[in-house]
Amino acid sequence: QVQLVESGGGLVQPGGSLRLSCAASGSIFRINDMGWYRQVPGNQRELVASITAGGRTKYSDSVQGRFIIDRHNAEKWISLQMNNLKPEDTAVYFCQADVVQTWHGASDRYWGQGAQVTVSS
Image 1: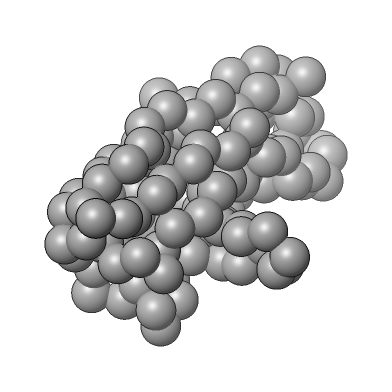
Image 2: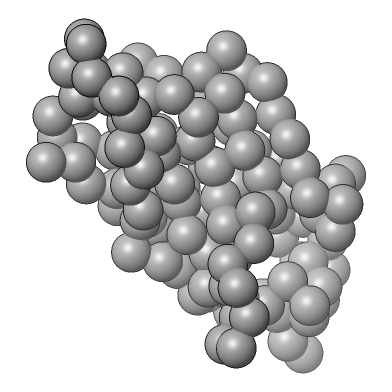
């Protein structure tokens, strides 16, 4: 099995910064795309940022220029540095990894447990 464990999150004032981390462990041959999603009650989960195994990144328009996604392939973790946070960034953030467990297998998507980020004065 594969586990994704998140850390970070919390309460921050508008304009502040937070960092989320997510470590993958278990039966892993290779990890393809990894990313961060967020969800607020009543809404669908939305992509915040993603990063390929080769380091290519993509950001949603709402966080472009404020958030930075990073990845360490050998140690199997990703992070999300969130700067200049706004109240509308308040959500539960989930990390995601597309994991291949055997050399001939297809990838399966795994999710972290979620981390609450609250931006409020």
